[in-house]
Image (cartoon, rainbow, N blue to C red; front, side, top):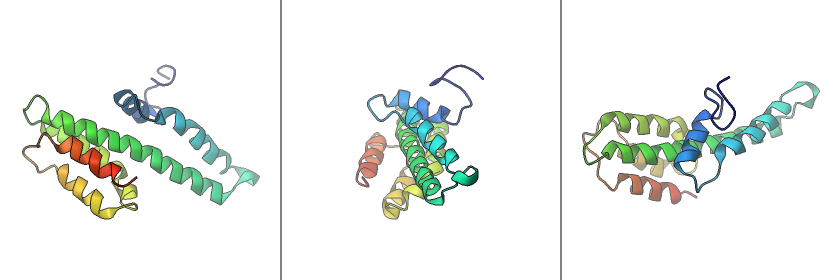
Length: 143
């Protein structure tokens, strides 16, 4: 135990609260995740088992993790550009976070996900200043 929420390191929602801090005007996904996880847990246990409710909780958590991954892709694509000097470590970080949810997101629009994959391709040796905005625009087109 390392402290109270939202700053509780190593918790199932640590990644979410970090991205909430980066995007304070958006949905607080770290707090939204807790009741979803509890709902899934309650519906997994003993005689209360309900497959439909577990599936509902699973889908809701995929959406929560997708929001965090999208936020990270935008953040780290911006950091990869830095002060105008390309930083491949931040590109790799953005790519990794994006890929953590892009499989689920591709069920909405596979073509757009592939376009974002190309913007975050870790073989790139530079990133245009427009990349973070392009990612945001492409993601918003899937709403």
